[in-house]
Length: 228
Image (cartoon, rainbow, N blue to C red; front, top):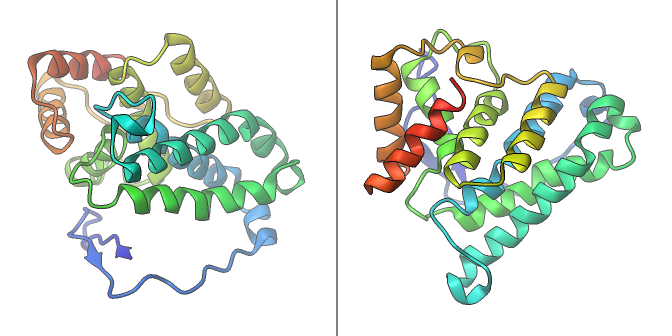
């Protein structure tokens, strides 16, 4: 029920809340199957982002650790993550001939939207998509040629490092990104990693992601350093 808006320069504008949700989404699997693989890869990483973002600043092992709405969001995000991480190589290599291609369309369009719906109203923008917003607003011209999911993917690596995910799990996502020719660091999305720019990036991410304690700020700085 939201329309993401941009201004004439390509910067993010205020989102518009619609009066009602869309009635139907029609997906042409032939059109999607013959589209450039770059689009598929970007969509996969955008959906993968839902899990590390859903657990941002959370420690959840059961439904008793959070609201039921948050728990449903996390459980669905885990299913999306597991499915896409395991199937992405086949999907990228084989497109519409991949074994679970139609499931991928359903997951990227519907299941991911369900997670976003449950996350709506949480009042926070987690790191992966906050990275995207920052680049569109502060690095607009230099990153204009990169897709939403490609920029989010770099943010996923920051988010996972901030979450203190296992190094092997982060490496698994990084290797998947490398296989699908997705940018792996800030320089690869044309961000000038000067000291002042990194300082601004860190401050903006901390503010919009509600990172305030010294321990978390130190974690964020270390996570950003891992993708410079």
